[in-house]
Amino acid sequence: MEIEHFESLYPEDTRFSEIEQILNFVKEGNSCQVVSIPGVGRSNLLGYLAYNRKVRLKHLEENQKKIHFVLLDFSEIRKRNLADVNKFIFLGILDSLRERGLTREYEKVNLYFKESVGLNDELVIFSGLKKTVDFLAVENDLSLVFLFERFEEYVPNLTSEFFANLRVLRNRAKYHFSAVFSLNKPIEDLVEPMLFSDFFEYVAEKIIYLPVMDKPGLMFRVAYLGKVAGKKIDKQVFAEVISLTGGHGRLTILCLEAMFSLDKKTSGNKSELTEYFLSKRPIRSSLFSIWNSLNPSEQQFLMDGKNEPKFLEQVFLCKDGKITIPLFRKFVDKTIMPGISLKKGEENEIFYDAGTNEIKIGERAISDSLT
Image (cartoon, rainbow, N blue to C red; front, top):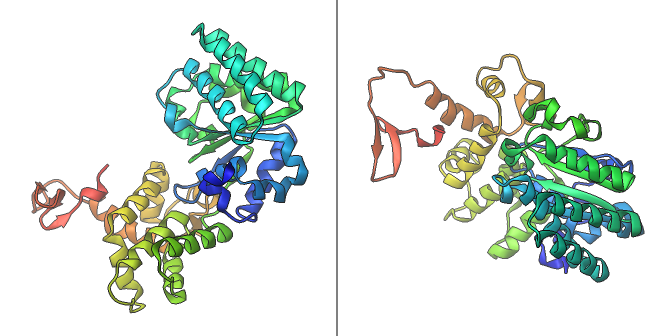
C-alpha cells in the first residue's frame, strides 16, 4: 500500500546521513528536531520514514518491523485545541496501522478510539490514547515514533499540557516512544523554555540540520520530472540550474520547469538566466518563503554582511559568510533590498496597477517585496 505515496518511490540512499541521525536518537528512546530552510525536503524526509520500505530496510533491516512511524501534519490542525490534537494523533495512528497492514492492531486501536470519542471528553480521549500506547509499545513491543510535520505552524497554539501529555506517553512506553519535530527553527527559539519543560530533556539541543542539497533525492526528482514532462533534461542546462540554485530541491525543480517553457536552447549566459528565473512567480514565491522564514537579524546580515548569525551556517544557507544559493543572493539584491530602501517622499508615487495586479512605485513593481 506504500506505493500510493510519492515518497515511497525515492531511492534507498535518500537523505542517508540525516535518517541515520534520526534513528540513532530513536534507538536511544530520545526525541529530536529536524530543522531547515523551506524547500529542501523536511516533509519528504518524514515521508521516507513513514512510507518508504526500501529506506527503512536500508537503515534498519528486519528491525524495521519493530519501529512504527506515525506521520502527523500539524498544518492541518494549527488552530485546534488540545482535545482535537489528541483525536488527530489517534486518527494518525489508525491510518498508519492500516497502511502497514497491521489488521489486528488496527482493530484494537479503532475500538479504543470509538470508546473514547463517544464521550467527547478531553480526559477520556487522552486515556484512550494512553491505552493505545500501552497496547502497541508495551504489549506488542513496537517502538512508536510520532513524526510532527510542519510543527512550527502549531507553535502559536502550544500549551504546556501538550508537552506534559508527551511526557506521560513517553513514561508509559519508556524507550519505545519518540517524537520527531519538523521545524524551520529550533524549538528553543520558538517556544519559551518553561512551556516545554516537561519534555525538555528529550528534545532540546537534539537537532538535525538538513543540507540544502540531497543528491540522490534530487536526481530522482529530476529524472521523474523529465519522464512526466516527456522531455530530456540537457546536462548543460542541469549544470546551469544547479550552479544557480545550489541544489536546493524546490528551486531546482521550479527552474527546470521554467526551462521547459523556453522556445530555444539557453545561451548559457548566467545573468540572462537569472533574470529569466526571477521573472517567474513560482520561483519568486519559493525565494520569498526562504526570506520570510528568517528573523530580522538574519535578514539584516544577508543585506549588509555584518554580524552573521550562527543559524545561517547551521542550515547551510551561508558558508564562510556567503550565501550558498546564488539565485537567492540575486533575489535579495534585486527584489528585497530595493523594496526595503524605499523612503518617504520618494519622487514616484506608490500605486496599485489593476491591469497587472501589482503594487508599483513609478514603473517598478514592488508587490513581491511586501509582506
